[in-house]
Image (tube, rainbow, N blue to C red; front, side, top):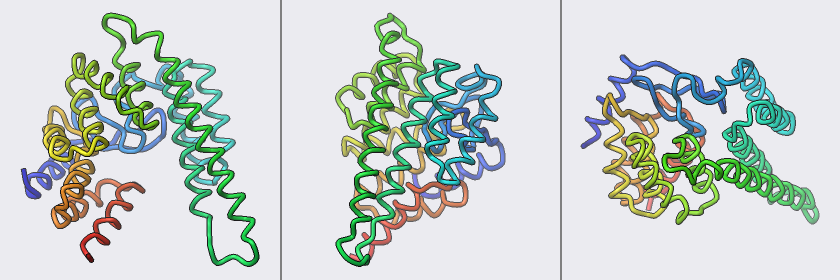
Length: 272
């Protein structure tokens, strides 16, 4: 496939797709058909899945989004705790982990080297960043533990398999994630392809990731995230010009910090 094919896929989605709100992080994602993957937290989007088990979940997630945007991360984390205690859905633990990662990153972003004196404020920011990152790791492990009871079943729930997979990915446990990706693929080809693509990018196998990402641009198995992974794969293959073109095609349809970071990395690479 080429840039023209990628553009046509996005044009089709813009005309035929619809925006769906994630029941775990509140992000809106353009999907086609009945299923998709959230463009922010990368959890599955499907009717009746996730927080729909709690009738108040959409309102709670909306409030969490407001709190996080106001930098009240502790308030947002407490709201996630309440959702988990009520629903026992471990995906809320994963979502809270992402929140803590975001909080950790915000502390790192505050570090400056033009302060006066011994820059004690930077030390405090580093300590806080480490604390929140540790909290995130704990939550990810808690989510894995909550799913473990289901994974010994002959045909475990796909939600438990995929959640365990993505938690292991966030923890950089690639060996464990690889085993889970194979199991996912044996049950659900859509999530199986997505899992392989994510794993291959992290295993530095951009050629394989590119092929799997292109499988996710078909109307019956579409994920807008696949275009981001295509751009990453092209970047890893040092095809910076092509990667930049994909980012340019994607930016009007997908707003994310990761995409902005990738765009900056491509720009810097092309200066060399």
